[in-house]
Image (cartoon, rainbow over all chains, first blue to last red; front, top):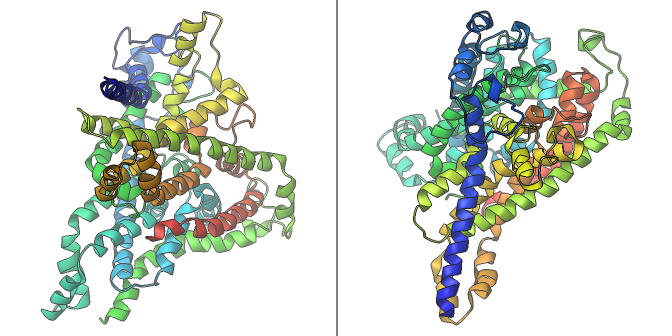
Length: 297
Length: 289
């Protein structure tokens, strides 16, 4: 009887914890989805509204429609044209996409080459990989201050190429450590066999080893894309007009007068769709990613 | 190409990018940090006055800087243990089998896949006067309850910490649950066979085997929490006043709102050096068994 009760209690408390965790994880997401689907009257009502009263797509449409046209639509009664954001989100989305993709390509390329060198030739011994790990521990805001000064001097401020280079450099420690862990899993005998068959060391890398780690490269690329796409810090300090990203645009809707809560929420949902999809796609490798390969999962 | 040369050639592209966008600015910073440069008065750094180490002395008595450092340490000291406790407990529950575990695991991991700035906005909405927290408080305590949480220093800081806890508890959970699942079962079964209780086995067999992942999780989370910026920027911009200003937020304000380039450069250099030294020792547990 006592055993049975204990077991019942364990099952019960487990369900409480699991359901509580699911609620805690999803409620903020639900709330933002809700705000993104309601009109201006329900953004900040006097009484808390737990469910959307009237669902509209205005907020989503407003992301991509110029403010002049928006005023004519009359979707946001009570808002002045000057309270609207002057640029649509289209520009920011395209910027985020190109800079995150470009940054990912750069990071994966230069990081994979370096990781191969460190894995197979032990380049830099133990020191070099740990140096890069230590770099990643530094606060990016302290790193960005000198870079902003440097970029302003070179007229690279608010420049997409300049930001792409940073998106290519900042995540490199992750690439090095992830790719190193993937390379280390390939037995050295395979390299030796390739060399025996007459491959040069370079050819054995790109003809034999690299194809074997295709999955590893793909996982690393998705992981880096998530990091680059999520960036606020680099973009907020180095962009003004031309190179603004989705995260910077998000802050634009948060004006001093009359924040565009619903439109901002719509952009927020838009911004997390790729990270959620890619994150779930590489769920099995997230532990390895976030712990720099220290825990394989 | 011989292996010796190849190993260096493979490092070359990384070296070029790093030198051009990180190392050169870092070298330049050693000059700028000793000037009084603000781009609003003179447009180029070489026209600024060289003031020697005075920046490094000034910030030591800068109350805003000191408060930002202490506030950041306070945030780390609160959120990291809370995230660890919650994440560990959840991982323990998820180390057993139950129906729907796979989908539940995925859902619990959702917050850490949310863009941090967006996560900050979610909590901004939640703590609005018309938000669900007030709705709940009014429901429980009556109409007079409820407040604009982000307009008061203490509650604003609490909201920021809660957003961080929401976003990063899954990080601890993820590390701990995969560590629980990869535990060797033999020693645990052996302990049960020898008559050890569940609690005893957990304390003396399971916990020692989890020491390394626990330390890694705490260190990585602690270091990340020190950098906290995105959520603060979206939720409060460091306000009201400077009451939620963290180190990163402080540097942002003084660098890119007041344009005290020389001054924040000197602070940045100090922070980088201190954390580089600390980081070098802190990453040691990641170096394998």
